[in-house]
Length: 169
Length: 102
Image 1 (cartoon, rainbow over the protein chains, first blue to last red):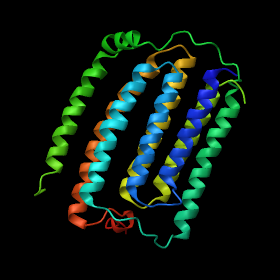
Image 2 (image 1 turned 30 degrees about the vertical axis):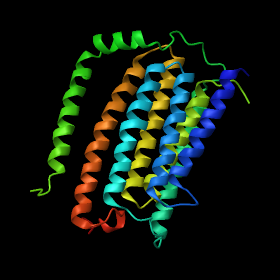
Image 3 (image 1 turned 90 degrees about the vertical axis):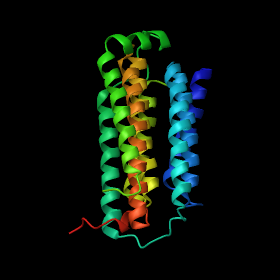
Image 4 (image 1 turned 30 degrees about the horizontal axis):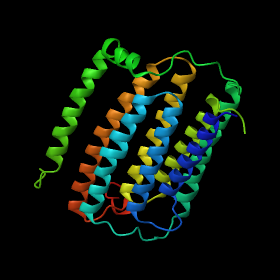
């Protein structure tokens, strides 16, 4: 039990508790509360990334997710001026179907994890996830997907501008 | 309490994914459904980074980098769609958007 393990348990507990509060908050149905807990989830997940030696991804996670994406979410929530989600009548069929699908996914996960026999002592990692090899990989083997992502971002930008026009034809 | 191995990270990732799925199925606010979708994407990212770390292979991290970029583009387009929908229907509630239902 090293310091890293203590940090793993702290961060994973924080991630799961905040993730649960995003989805089922017993105190508030306000989307702003959910967004704030999603920010906390993402930040604690960046902590898990640091524990996994993925330092660059931890920084990107905080910059892009906790920064850009969540600001976009909060901006839209304020733009739409959404009231608290009123409690409506819950349909029994929906509840049963949803609960069954979630239970099935959890069962599949548990079964696959049980079958895979990873064991508690996983082999020692070979490479530390330093930023330099990641960048070299990104600009050599994954150059084509990287360039295609820039086109994707351009397409998304044009699409968003088109969708936000007032008179959508 | 054991040493944190690959399976511990995978369990956290699975639990987070299930929470996201529960949110998509159970919540009725379109924006909260979207946030739960982000939660599921993040769970997949965690599994990929853990796999990449414990297999000594950086390909998983490159994939996570791509996923984060695609997720950012997806959020922008999806929120623009929600805003356009809200302008037309004055509602961001899932049950009010049932005009395609038979």
